[in-house]
Image (tube, rainbow, N blue to C red; front, top):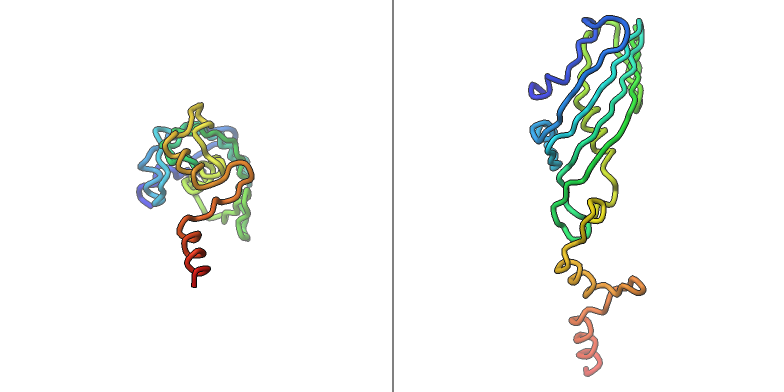
Length: 173
């Protein structure tokens, strides 16, 4: 976790009110999570609002991730962006954290946001990633291989040549 120390926010040193933080997430950040994600640079702007017993963290991220197209496996730089809010409650009786609500004990003095940053980047990646998302066409060699295996009109798989030969052999016996 030493690699992620720069994502610690020592909130006890902050005055009440708004504070702005800026982070740049690169490949080194993702390697700390043993992730396969690659990034040129994802910029994160954090607005940290501190009150007596509660903090509001508003994360805004934007940048590009190096991913593979789900159709043709070509490398693409997919733009990602997102805005997420997390509430932090200081209490004498900490409870189990929820998705967007963190409970900290009154003796805590810092908050590490690295896991939240990683999760928000992952949430900003669409389920289906294709070359079309970045304005390109898929690799024609790969798509022709795919269409030769799948009948595009009805989505059914074409019969396998080996299974046809096996059926003919069984009929002859």
